[in-house]
Length: 464
Image 1: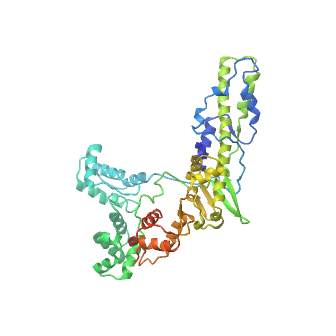
Image 2: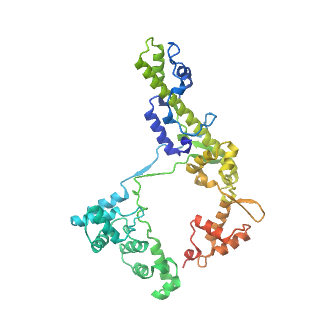
Image 3: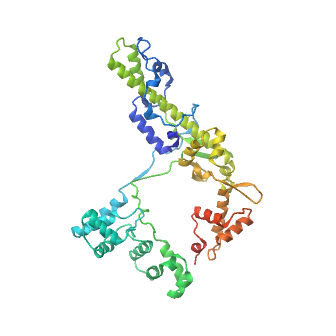
């Protein structure tokens, strides 16, 4: 069950770890069944005590979950055209980059310590979200630096706010945007944008455009230019930094679904189906012990160790085969359950589907399906999708038919996309439109779906 939960890249790491820790496990094809008899009678030929399988402690390799009671070999995968080497974007961390930039400044020891403390107080989005007085207190208690709010503010403005990426170290969104604008070459529109943000930030974010035009005596076109200029800024300068995570990984699809002559074709990423075998060397060591006429205690200890490793290796190979089969059976059932979607790519064709629907069809536990769905991706003709996105609850339409909430969300998204942005639709109006289309849902449900789609309220969708 633990292996099933792992996506492709994590599975490869687990596989690598197992091979490193168990010398009885080798890569490559070879029939491992030939050692079964050897494993069952190490001591019988010599007339000494037999080591039973139950005596072997392999807890390190077993999970608490029950192993499925079937073992079949999975060969539904292809190595053709697959990217074997996963690209990584490696680099120093976001905070280390900021600290490195401090070395370009010339200031006293106290100022340097304050600057380093401020850098350490920046969150991953690039903000310092604490009051300056709190920072002054922390400097005194944790760094034994007794300073003033004014000095901390000076270091913040003259040092931290000049670091890259632009806008880093801001205490709120307003300050973040203004810092970025002031770092750019001065133009009439940028100066106007700074003035609007500094004096009427609330009116701007709430899109009270008429009030802004009246207050600043500007035209609709000028306000549009201001809006365009501000929209180019980064509200989270820290999160855009490539080195924010020391290693950024790309998504590796665990499955691939293709349309071949109008039929759906499912394959498992070949990286989930490694070629493993029992080590010849360890097998020969076991046979050598059996053929020996003298059985010393050290030899018995050695064969006990060998048996542990061989049993663990065989278990791991079987567990991988079970993992392959479980992944394929589960994804194949999901694919056929949502066949209309995979044939067309139309999300409105997604049927209501919960974990139990699939679990019942494959006679497995819901937790098994959950492990597959929550962490695996599938490459489709319509993009790479997280498998759990194909699951959704059902609702009744005006005909009493069960429809997927995904279908309703897609229609809601389309309606909002096509609305007149100068007069965006309220949640009440959206509920009315959905009802007219055959989906009688309440306004509060519309609001919930809208939020799940990351669509702002009508007022914030308004454009100039």
